[in-house]
Image (tube, rainbow, N blue to C red; front, top):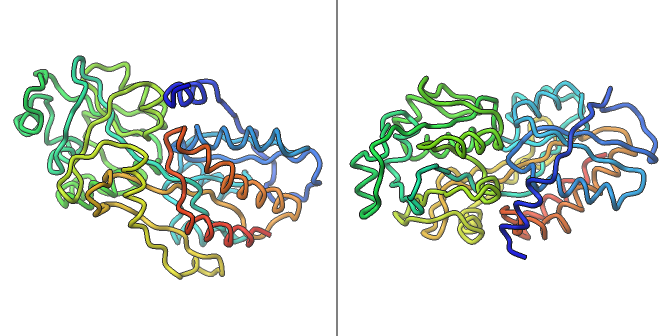
Length: 353
């Protein structure tokens, strides 16, 4: 059975919907415990599989998760209407300060953000480092632009507008993507900015979540947009080969993603006002010649102080993600955590009490 088949099967058949808890901090019994979470769509295919399998293996426990975007997940977490959340943008110091119970912020998996496109007959597309930021700044607007053509000799590029598809919601994927573009192109940073929401050119098409952007690209000839690697794999969408910091053209892959993660360095700092470790790190422009240039960790967010029964199950859920869950990651297009990161996450998870 091929990796692509497994990804498509899991991606297309898995759908878990959240039932919001009335109060995430209400004391509960260990029996018939329902945990609800919301947030990032980036890791949704993987998390869905984790939560479904964990629920089957853990008697009396059901874990539901709604992929509604990192920004919405952080808002639910802040409003205390979920038991946990997920975000590709982690949380800012200001957001953490709003959580009275304290926060434990854990990187649980990692992945690559790809530029997927819809061009009939173009199976391979190379985009130089100075070109793709200009596409997303609206400065390069046609597929046969001389700068794109120069990087793709022999490729028949259409005389057609590039329909750029961006996220319409508050998105951790947007945060990472615009962080990369801002790091490599000061003009992009000045014109568009870096954040979970930015001021895209008005000509861009908008769609919610990774699956919404993926569907729009697939349905729109001449389109290009940024999505998580798994979504492109699942729908058999072509992905651009990007030039990295070392000047090499690198396609997204497990090895290229691991090469990007290898440069991650966690600090010894703690989160603001807490003894929980600060496990936030960004890889906006990895230096390795083998690295795909846009890769990121993605985080799960937990309340530090909470009901004992929930805390025990949530710690078990994290441990599942660090063991069986990591084994699932490569088959679904995600990057397993390095052993050193797993050790740090396991230690931090003990603070969920």
